[in-house]
Length: 553
Image (cartoon, rainbow, N blue to C red):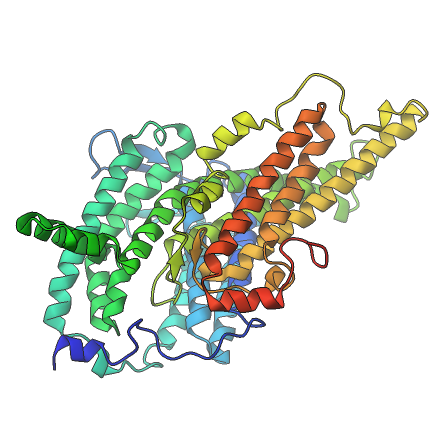
């Protein structure tokens, strides 16, 4: 049986027939992102208590890191919380993937039980109990394990057990399996092509002045490990993917294969002195979608890694204090007098903890969405915005381009003068009453900001494993998307107004922030222009009429 016969007995796009799109259901598993986001938040909260109260130094550092990298790119030591945080994100991804691929009620219940095991054990360790090892760490398999890391390992084993229990549940159709020899040969060349692409990218990330500062240090560490993982595991993964593919169309979604197509087309055009082969390869729609999708990953993954560590550090700074203050209140020690806990101090810690916790869920799920796109999870990009205006509108909201917009629209910079939104400016209002009104206004603005950030996190959780800017990985219609088409954008803008307006002392700052918000309007417009090529999105827009505010706009 020929290769073409074995892999072409399905539709040309490689997908089996599916049910008509239902705008009330969409293309997502509604609970996937909720499970992953909450697991990350609760587990990282336990870890914050652990490294603050139980193991303040975080345990022994990891020495001689990345020693196999070229001179100048290795690290003498890395704080182990770096590895622990990525372990939490990896467990979150494993839970989401298991939930999506093991859909029968028994295995889904077991998946939730595995998540509970991880959360429960991490909190047992966080409150000071030592259920695994008596000391702060114990050597095992060449790694000095802390009690918290043992709890993560047990959670991982529980998830793997649920996953393994599903092996054999879905039989592979041998009629669509490619020959082994062909799969090995093509996997090797794909792996080499991917290695060349990844190698070129890592040289930029490790040596370009923009990425060599402290801000991107965690990304430089991460990309070095990702390159190592690909170098080791990329070949067997490519082999399995080639062996189990169901359509030739799946090839064009693999970056390594597309690189080989480009290389072959260029060589052929040079030998034959005919540019038709190169033009055909470089203008092919599937090839261009894959290249653009890789561009999205190369831009956003470093940003998401950096944002992840920023928000988790903020959570570590505020949550232990909120935890302590709450414990005092619940134990009825102190009160509002004699050094006790005031309502405002407790609310300050709660507010900071909640906001950074929501952003932590948002960035961790975003990171998983960008990195873990695979045909096995059915979250490959169907299309990527091909327009320059769409890319500019999206990238202008992230580093480094947002540095330019912030320079020309410096709404957050202090300016001379008294705050405009200030009740003490009202001559007819008593000073004490004006101060009380200012405090009340600040309280309300913080509540509204918290609600807006919750909408942002809710929107990201609705995507689950399908989150990615500038791409179409399936139309999302549930969660906040059942009410408006761009809940994350309006949530961000309301949060920024609530955070900033009390500090404005110049009318220009109102204009600057409004102009910054207009960029998100442009993002919405260009996004809808791109997605409107999908009939499913057109059907969704017919059901959800409003872009930003239900019943209004």
